[in-house]
Length: 239
Image (cartoon, rainbow, N blue to C red; front, side, top):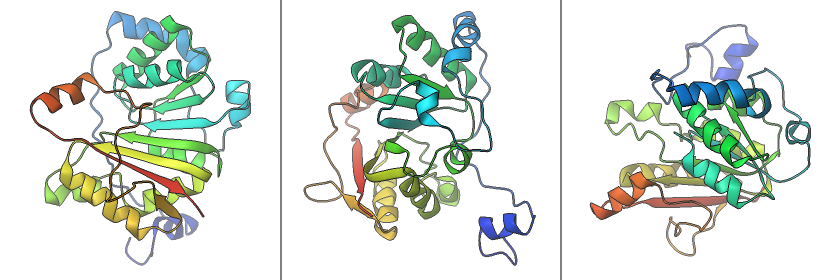
């Protein structure tokens, strides 16, 4: 940052500071099905990036609590959640186009009307497109742990990110994180303790049992068979 204390101060001075990304974009090849799904369903289910807040009621054509998921992978569990909770509106953000195509294909087959997807950097979407106090829940499941110490700065869960999320949740809204890396779970818990305005929903300790609304993925099931743990953290915005 040099002479600037933070990103906002640099931007106010008209200076661009390159940001550390929490992901590496890998452009996989689209299958024919994924490409067709993008062609068919993006016009009605896709949201293009814009540098201004969304009107969430207009986006979905109704008023309902909004759940935002960052990094939905191939979208299978996101589609399952949206299908199981038609009373909620869901937005999924993913930077890898094959995943966006796969998600749209499944959602389109089910005829879902309560799901929208974006292909963009989630931090920018949060800052510029999600209205303050617009979310009921933000989901961050199995983000890249960046397990090497020199890469920890790339982890998406940092105080600035968590504070941004807090401003986008309404009072009583939830930040739900899950990881299969114990050290990252510990990092998440420590970060959350640094940011005011949240209350941990765990009855004791830092972690909660997996809630019924979060599906168990094939990846997670395979890990459990190998003896790998999974840690869920759910924090409520209370201020």
